Amino acid sequence: MTSSIQDKQTAPGDPVGFTKHDHGSCISVGLGAADAHCKAQGLRFTPVRRKALEILLQEHRALGAYEMLDRLRDAGFGSQPPVAYRALEFLVANGFAHKIERLNAFIACAHPGASHSPAFMICRLCDSVAEAQASPARGSLGDAARATGFTIEKTVVEAEGVCPACADKADA
Amino acid sequence: MTSSIQDKQTAPGDPVGFTKHDHGSCISVGLGAADAHCKAQGLRFTPVRRKALEILLQEHRALGAYEMLDRLRDAGFGSQPPVAYRALEFLVANGFAHKIERLNAFIACAHPGASHSPAFMICRLCDSVAEAQASPARGSLGDAARATGFTIEKTVVEAEGVCPACADKADA
DNA sequence: GACTCCATGTGATTATATAACGTTACCTTC
DNA sequence: GAAGGTAACGTTATATAATCACATGGAGTC
Image 1 (cartoon, helix red, strand yellow):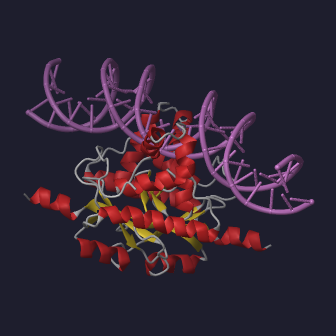
Image 2 (cartoon, rainbow over the protein chains, first blue to last red):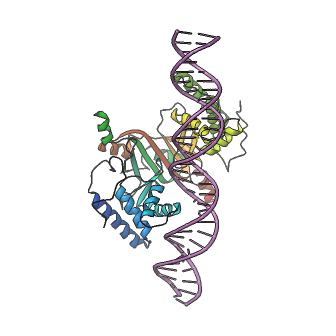
Image 3 (cartoon, chains in turn green, orange, purple, cyan):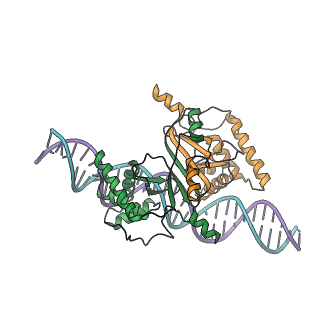
């Protein structure tokens, strides 16, 4: 297991999701949930897919597809874009990861197993991303959809702004 | 004026925003509002920018930056990507247009002058896009932001699904 | 063991977006 | 109306993101 001491030479300040968690358990919980879900659904949680999820969980921030590709290549997998895109597509399709449209980047799901209409808060200063639960059908969007007869199948909800840590730095 | 009879040889079925409007007036109203706003704010509503907005208003659908570039080139402007991106950036920055992150495409604002936290409904079958008003601070996203100390500066709210017209087709 | 299905690996290409730089137009200030 | 500053424009080049097409290989089924 790769748990507690990661080989993260990469990041800027802090990977974060605004609040501190037990990061090692994040990874094992996330992988475990995916394992279980795949077993239950008869999905093939292959080595690339598993490694891709592990990478996202380790980084704990939004990763571009090509960053993912670099990591996967380093781990001994194929080196062409489809390798990364296919793994990410699988993770997203099964709710283990999400795509942040605003950033064209991907992040591990913070609530594995939960119902899943995620909403994201993206710090424009440090690029950290936190995941919250959205309630699409409620609120003005749901009203508009009902009024026009539009059927909502999926929602993208992303807020851009400043995270508490960066706000503190700015104050100082 | 280009008003009522447009030279739209382009689109698939129907440009739409789900509901029928007086399309000719859309264009003149949109351009007029932009004109007025720019004059009031001391902004330079240059020929490229004006033409770009006119194109978006005519199309009445989300246009990719390179489609926009084609149109601008046809209209006698520069033919390199920055030409389109700069015009679109200006329009977005000043609320005359919006970027649909999900589509990497741009659409004219449907509520020129309004307060502006837009929400979009995107039909996955015909790619039509309708704009509604969102209420970011209210709802679960606002709750999460307040709880974590995140400052929201801008929101992206996009719903993907099926528009009423396409739903009808599917029924038939 | 042959078949099928799905996943993988690769090469090539398309789409989207930005960097960098010189030139031009506009608006001031004198 | 000339000098100077600023913002917009045009172009070349390049970076980043995503998909297509096709061959190979491995896991399950019969």
